[in-house]
Amino acid sequence: MPVDSLGFVLQTMLAVAVLAAGKGTRMKSALPKVLQPLAGATLVERVLASARTLAPERRILIVGHQAERVEAQLNHLDGLEFVLQQPQNGTGHAVQQLIAPLQSFTGELLVLNGDVPLLRAETIEQLVETHRNSGADVTLLTARLNDPTGYGRVFADDDGRVSAIVEHRDCTEEQRRNTLTNAGIYCFNWSKLLAVLPKLSTDNDQGELYLTDTVSMLERAMHVEVADADEVNGINNRRQLAQCETLLQQRLRDHWMDQGVTFVDPASCTLSESCRFGRDVVIEPQTHLRGVCSIGDNCRLGPGSLLEDSELAENVTVLHSVVRGAKVARDVAVGPFANLRPAADIGEGCRIGNFVEVKKSTLAAGTKVNHLSYIGDAELGTDVNVGAGTITANYDGVNKHRTVIGDRSKTGANSVLVAPVTIGADVTIGAGSTITKDVPNGSLALGRAKQWVKEGWNS
Ligand code: UD1
Ligand code: CA
Image 1: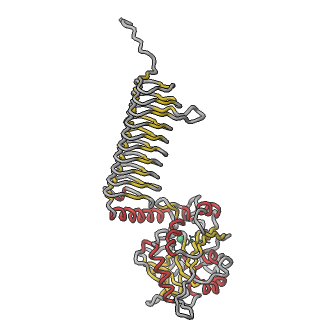
Image 2: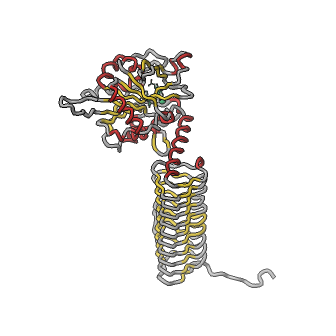
Image 3: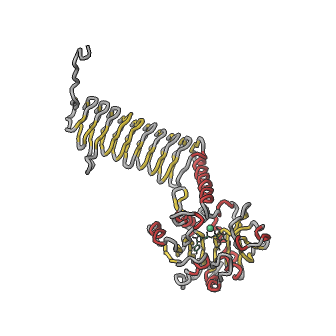
């Protein structure tokens, strides 16, 4: 560890560079590989997040293939620098692009492959620390894999000194039997790397400049083997993407089970990392949570439900339903087969039954919409009873209009409320009515043709 003349430990500067310029040919996708999603976050966002706890002085993303698209996706991240690699001539060429922006930089350069998304922050912290303590020119992360196909092979002695990395496609049969693989995560002494970076050659099967070749050019190269080889899974194709998704989902579910969430059939459910759960939540089979969700104590979700960007208070049940962008207060039952859409705000003790769609509407406590309804752009008071088949006709073909229903009012079956319209409190709407005018408090409103009977018609 470096010390100054008085013996104080010097804090070394750290720059993190993420390689994200490659096309990802093997994905066969219009989307750049590093923007492929995994449990709701892109690969590159995951890689950047794994280095966050290190609080590096510089954070650099090397972009190339569809650079504008990658930049647009990550522009919101504070202090992230973008460096363009054009054309994309290999991982060594990518890091050569740092020579100018890191001209006056001294310290360590942590290089992360943009397609290795399961890495834990602690693993990287450990790598940097080992590197600082050993005084090596480079320390890289390795893994022993049962199937090392496709990965670069690392040749090292028993003391952890690395002599070379040889890419799978450049290996001899003999070399391929080595199962120690390169994870694509390196901590370099920047000034040492700078001395060898310009010397890379394209003398390999792909005719590219390989960052891995710097290892044999540096005097002291060391490696650290990860304990959990799953962390260093690289994603080059859709199968590997699916394997990583499975691993990540398992990690997320295990975490929440440890926090008191029950999964009836864990493998059939998926979560995003931005989901939060209270105690004794039960997640039934085939239930999926995406985006930012917050689920209160004792909720029961599923079977067969999808929740996205929604907030549920305690004791809510959601059965075979879709809940997106909605807020649901405590003790509400949703479904089966309900659709809560963005800005549905459901009050305490409400009931949203089968084939009911609610969009951009507020329902106060105790209100029931039990069967076959559409409630859109509406404000319903407390204890309203919405009869089966009631529809708020909110759209005139050009604009959306509001419907207001006061406390304790009841709409008869098959009512159409043509917005804009205000129904007062304690109102009864007769079944089959088409209501086009406001209805004052306490009234009965009927808006349908009178029944007409001609006796003896068929005799
Ligand atoms: C690389 C390593 C290999 C290691 C593996 C781990 C090299 C030569 N090989 O192989 O030893 O086992 O990762 O996952 O480094 N990229 C650029 N610019 C380029 C090319 C690639 O930024 O010109 C980026 C890609 O976007 C990707 C990363 O670098 O995020 C790795 O590139 P990839 O082509 O996937 O390398 P691998 O063949 O997997
Ligand atoms: Ca790769």
